[in-house]
Image 1 (spheres, rainbow, N blue to C red):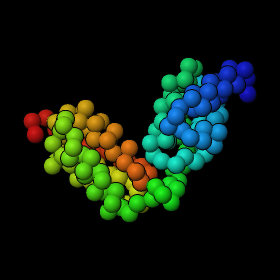
Image 2: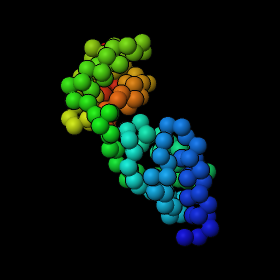
Image 3: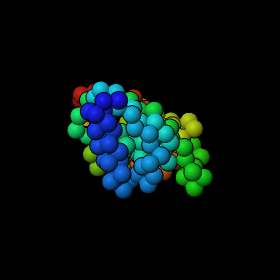
Length: 150
């Protein structure tokens, strides 16, 4: 590794260490190859995985981030798929910026898939952001279609 890669690695580790959303930043391995960073290890939620990725992406000198982080829920955070689906539907129903009636939610092993139609891209993005914070979610696939004139 050259000194630039060492500096990028150190800077990413520093970003991870200062984020309160990441209770165990030392459990995330960081490796730089040029301006590309790879994150490996295990985190306790999908939200923590996203936080680690965002921290790495905003670090000076980083052009791309390869995500190899695994989400492993602790027993207290595990939920049945039906519970997760209910929580996601409730979270979407509370959203003031779109009509949740046009969104269907499927959950398999904690992985949420959003399907349906929305009027604008910001509504799709908002739905995604609302879902990632639901306890028990291990990942999200956003298949919402933006259809003008719904």
